[in-house]
Image (cartoon, rainbow, N blue to C red; front, side):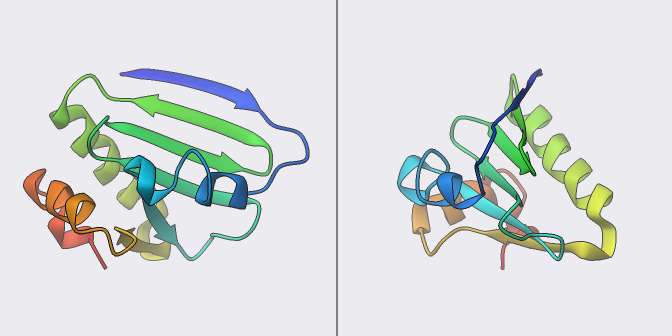
Length: 109
């Protein structure tokens, strides 16, 4: 698994919501009770790419295979515990079907 960390000054999550991490680019939102304009997480089940943004800190995780991707999503679920809401496929049927095929359908909301 490849992980990188960067810092983006003067940015908020909406840059990702409507840009790189949009549904049109294959991303779903990983929703938690901690989300706000300075925090968000997105996952692309096609490219196995997870993006997390927290008050300027930007983390990119790219799994080498589907198993790693599923393990990382489950790790995120455990990390947030009761603050984990689920995965929002953004009303995109292809994204939803892909998460289901990976065995993560129980996390969709």
